[in-house]
Length: 181
Image (cartoon, rainbow, N blue to C red):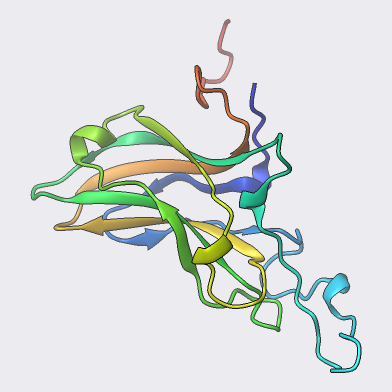
């Protein structure tokens, strides 16, 4: 069974009508954007430069493999031929405690409104940044990106989270309050 940490929720019932980032960001340092964590104020040997910290969550530990898990909470509707790709982005610390430039690590194929029906779910493993990563600093910030193409959606809400080892048989399920099992 997968457990969901509130800090790894990147979008919660977010309305998406055009291309947008998720409403939340995962900071591997846990202190939040705009805050320089105490561990990066050290000096890098002879250069005297501040050393930003980051972590490649896609590398995992060999057992706990992080995945982006998403589910549609309100069906997507498009008057045109809109499609949406769901991707995971990462950015290094810009040196002042905020995110630098985000770049997509990986994303889904284009999804149609029929594939984004109510309760539709999906997941994909977050790959190591490896050769796709530009720059020397490892990413500190992660966010989900919803890329809408061809048209816009007139309705649709989606939630997305980073989860370790989600079950392949039963993905994250939302149950109403006082649900009787």
